[in-house]
Length: 207
Image (tube, rainbow, N blue to C red; front, side, top):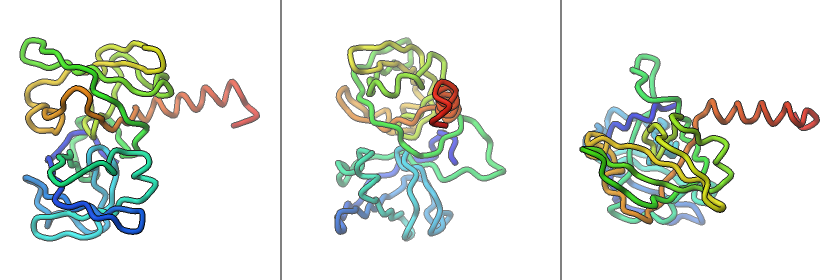
C-alpha cells in the first residue's frame, strides 16, 4: 500500500521490449537505490511495480502485457518523468490516503489555470469512473494524493478539477504536465468498496 505522498521523481533511462512485455530502468533523483530491495513494491506514476533489479543509481521493473494494456507505460520513452513512492511501512506517517497502485483508468489534462499562487488543473476521464469521483473526495493522479475541487459530467466523460500548490508542482511530475497529456487515475479505495456494496444490495443474486 501507498499514501500518495510522492518521495521522488525518477527519469526513465531505458525501455526494452521483451516478448510482448517491457523492461524499464528508472533513475531516481534523490531516492537511495540501496535502500530499495529486490522484490519491493514501488509506486511508479501511480502504478504498483516490483523491483526486479537494482544498481547504485537505477531501479529495474518488468512491465507485463496486462499492465501495458491498462496504463500509459507502453508510450513511455527515455526521459519520461515518473513519481516514485516506495510502499509504506507500519512506522510511516500516513499523510495522504490509502493508495493501492492499481490504476482504475487514464485521464486527460484538459486545461490549466492560475489561482493566486496555485494552479487549478481540469481533467476528464471515462464516464465509468463518475460514481467514484466526488467533490472534496480523494483521487490519485500519477501517484499523487489530491483532493477533488469540483465535478461535472460532459457527454461521455466525467470532468473534475484539483488545486495544486507550488510545493506539489515542484516535487512531483505534475508540474511538467501540459494540456492534452494523459495521466493515471486511481479512485478512492473506500468509494470503490461502497459502490460494490450498493450494487450488491440492488442485485443480491450477483453478490
